[in-house]
Length: 247
Image 1: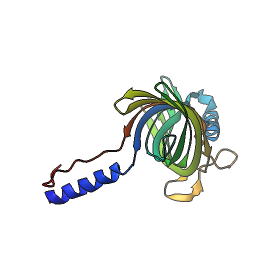
Image 2 (image 1 turned 30 degrees about the vertical axis):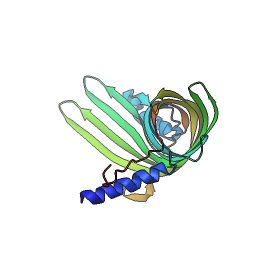
Image 3 (image 1 turned 30 degrees about the horizontal axis):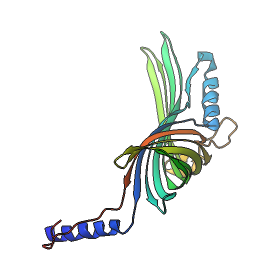
């Protein structure tokens, strides 16, 4: 078994030494999210309980997001790759006093998976300036948790989950700053366009979330993106093999 593992490792190293260069990136960032339909849905829900003076405590603000990518170098200036990301935001309606409490929590998150192309158009000192385009699919999930409680008497609560799949496109520009030994820092600014889709019940695609006008409610992750991360370049590796077959 050990010999087979050695052979596989030697083959992999030989393939890498044939000229394949990869860049692995781990990023965090901050994004704004449009979410106009969901903001209106939240406002309508607060208006329904207006006699209780319900407040819209949080209404789908911008928040941190996370992403990772693996890129293959077509040349010194052109790279293609795959990427994955995670986004989250949410809304909250709330009111409480001596007699009771009401709240509606509306968290939403999404996972993204897509392709990207990056062009390094200028290099100077330790900086590589680039333009990039990403595109792919978003898998969103929305939870609605509602509770109404009258102290010392009774409480009612409900919760359900809505989902959808949508597509996105994100152009951006940024730079890598070399940190030495194959590591570099990454910074970029961009804007994501979300080709939004209806939110529907997790187990029933035909039953969609609607507003007070009986119109479908869409998620919309469109917004500005600020990205800061760390990248590692896997350059050509040459495997040295001894005469006895050991590494």
